Image (cartoon, rainbow, N blue to C red; front, top):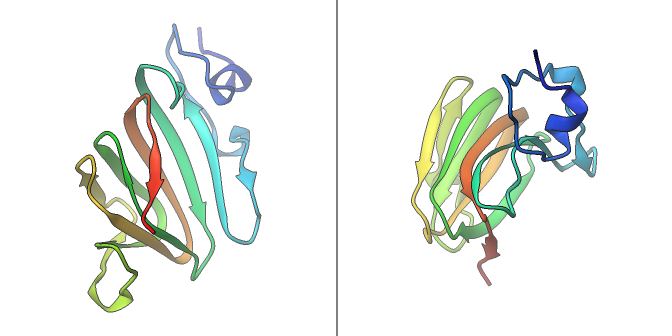
Length: 133
């Protein structure tokens, strides 16, 4: 039996096989910018989770770091990734659909979208994001 998409998106821990169709993802945030959705798990609780990110073309996530390692899988578009405390588009690496990145905990980085970009972020909670000032 499959877990209903509503239970998965709500952040409940799955107890059965989980499959979520793209149209069942409940995006939150500004439509013309950065949107997020929890595909499974709970980023605030102990254990694994998958969060989806959708960036509009030209949108940047400012420099930040996380308390745990994170993994990114590019689903659509191109994700521009850079390291450091200030955005420098000239030094980013462009990951195309199918590309994977692993960011170690406490490493400052930033991301931008080229074209509509959809990314799966996979990590273990509790997960925090600290913006670099």
